[in-house]
Image (cartoon, rainbow, N blue to C red):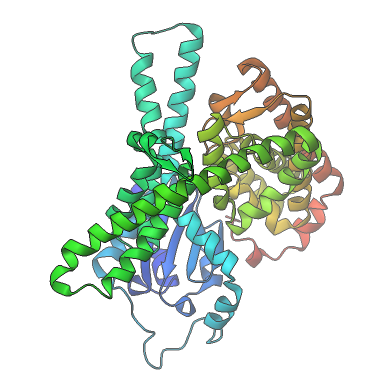
Length: 483
């Protein structure tokens, strides 16, 4: 009998040659649904075959980074197997073999370089810093929500202080983790990046006066830690080329921590604190003043961001808001995109209930992907249902826009709905909800947004999705999710 581990190994083994083999893979990571690979030579891949591989829901490419959408749970097992297949043979770089034809054409690399604008490259690298932190953000956020319920109900008073410590420790020290990952991503020594970023949260900074004001521990938050680690990396690289080899092991770390540390205290923390405050003020003003319109735009555009893999770039903003206010008011609005996707998928299922050919395959896909969609993981439905059909993707965005407008409308009335952690959405966000009107009101507004997204996504897709025509005309080769 085949086990999940066996299936994961088989899928990893099938993916590996399609991305150029182990020597072409320089790094392996994953987020909630995607295997994220950095490749030495993207011309050695076979993207069409990769997309058609059973178990692969989609592929997102940007420069030398490839994201293979596999779905929740599966991606964790496949990543572990993939790392086992690549790490023993992985080499830092390997040029394409002489005379070996590129699978997808010699011009692909130049095309990807032209597509790799500075903005896209910056967003990709920013995601690489924060994506590895998501599991801890989710775990600590859920524990914080559970602890809040226990405190409000007056239950287990002997346990809640311990839960507070367990849930809050990571958030208190998250700048250190950001510093480690930043230095690693930008070519510095992770420990030095973490050491400089630790200055941001060190209690002793309260005794430091910079630019005429007393600093406070945590001032600048993750943005300050990001900037501090970037400065440390620049200083370290400068030292490496100038310090004599005999003194490098002593002077380079000391100079890096000294120069970058002082720069963090006397410039970065103040500036990053001002930026963080501006982000919080802008988010609150946006929803309080133009809530319905802002919610409509944010909820409607989030699915395309997810499709392109750019939604991870919002993590620093969410983290900054959580650090400042205890919750992010943006995540519940953006989560409405998933509600619209669920409503659209259900409409496709209903529309094709009498179709015995392609409709049966689509409905099987929807049944398997819908539980994940209800819990806020939308990629299986996006890549498996709405995006291949075309118009249902747009009607799903309409559902997300309606749900976002619903939550934004109540924000204009003074009822802010937020999330105490990032990661899950859909029904999975209920334990993490927080706001300024109490948990009952907050949960009711969020539930109303979900219902609005479901309803509008369903109605728009049922009426305007062109489901039967799209299913009838779509070529089977374009639908890799068909069993």
